[in-house]
Image: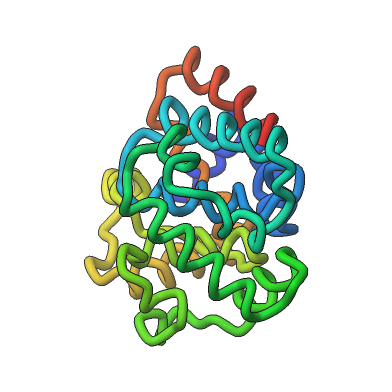
Length: 219
């Protein structure tokens, strides 16, 4: 029943594989790692992704373009006034800046830096990771950044958990839950990230799901 339900829901979102492949190739937001980091930092405060976060990140992308900001190093030079003109949550910007600072220390090329960090990161030791230790970075933000850096995994957030809990008995521990979904994906012959992102879409009715699928094509 579980696998049959998952396959049926996956068939409702034909673009899902494309969205996930673009994420794993670090190609979201036109390959702009600044926007990927900002997206993850905004997600860390747990508000609606499609209605609030994505529009805010897109507005910030326009600001960056107008200001000629092309990479994380230039992003770090932006003032609080500029940042807060788009998003007023200090915690989000603290997370974004500290993640950016660490990635810049790894490599001058943002994409290489993010992918290098993700490749060297681990789930089991996430709290000891340089990014995992940043205040405000929880397991969901950590996993999300790993996905955008090329790691096929899942976020154990409340939406993902609620979906799977409605279908099966799932581990309560975050790391055990992540491994459970990853193993399930292997059994199904799909990617763990696809099962993760699936849950974010199917929580909505058909009309909103269609609108959010169109929105995702922009990022």
